[in-house]
Picture 1 (cartoon, rainbow, N blue to C red):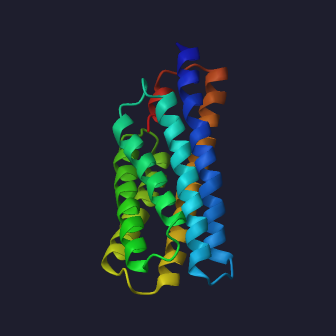
Picture 2: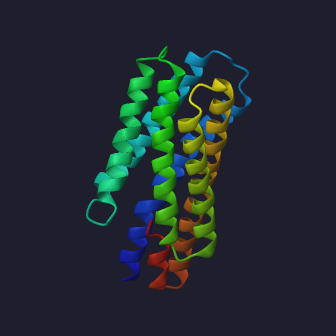
Picture 3: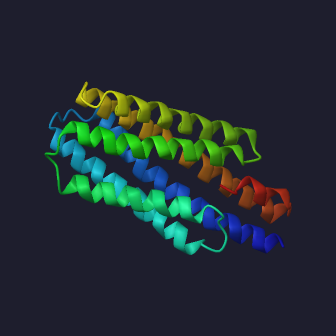
Length: 197
């Protein structure tokens, strides 16, 4: 049983770790890069969406028999990839379209993170995903309601949200690794429940 639980958790931690790397890199880029060309920022954002979507898609198909959230994860991953490719090949599309499309995705992502986080047993994990989810919901609403105002400001806010999302993934991945180390020393059935997100 302990070996099965360990394998179950090991299937999760790498996904969150890779997502963290991509998200944090994009978040820092969006916040500190002095580039003011919107097309360049859109391209970088598109690549980040594609990368995170692919990582999510790989996880979906490697854990299809283990995850009850298969459809939601699949749709979010495919949506991220589709939006990423759309933006990459339409760099000069109006900001209203960009804000509407990304705002919708971020809003849905935020709601999913909040709901999924509520199913976690660890209070620290619940808090982290709640913060990331709320940040996504707030940003999504702002982008949908103000698609034509402050293009660079909204992009900066998007970078801030993605950075929060990335740090949440990183801390969660670290926590999962700690659970694996605990299993090596002390097999506990409850540990698996903490990783079910």
